[in-house]
Structure formats: C-alpha cells, structure tokens
Length: 101
Image (cartoon, helix red, strand yellow):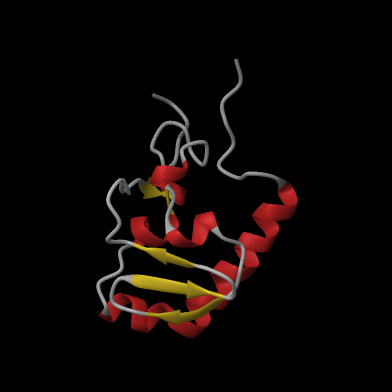
C-alpha cells in the first residue's frame, strides 16, 4: 500500500498553489485579523491528507481565486467555504502532513 500524496493531481495542485499564493498576497492580513487559522485555510487530514474532504481547509478544497474574506466565510469565484458549518473537522496545516499514522 502506498502513502497518499498531499495533493489531488498535479494540475489541481498547481492551480490550488497559484490560488493560494494569490490569496496570501491579497487577503492574508484580512484573514488573520478575522481569526482564520492556518489549518482552516490550508488544512488536511493528519494521516490521510486530502483523501478526507471534511478535514480540508478552504484553500485546499478549491483551486479557484478568492474574491472576499469574511468572518466565517471565504468567497471564491463560483462558491464559498464556511468555517462554521457542522461536520467540518480541523486538520493539520498541509506542511505538517506526514501521511504516517
């Protein structure tokens, strides 16, 4: 059995990376001031990475550009992510993902 990689596919990973960098340039200060954590933005399941969508942070779920940051919502071009939805579990920042459990 192989360890799951912390990206979905190369194309989606590159698109997500580009969107995340644009988010940091434009909205990092606003998100921090509103209390968004690294895990809420860039989180993944601590053992399964992106395989568990209920642990994914806002920017890991979408490769779309962020258009607004609100107290409980990140708004994308076509959708949004709410951090106050029932069933959302906070993962670990993607940089802390080891894939070992």
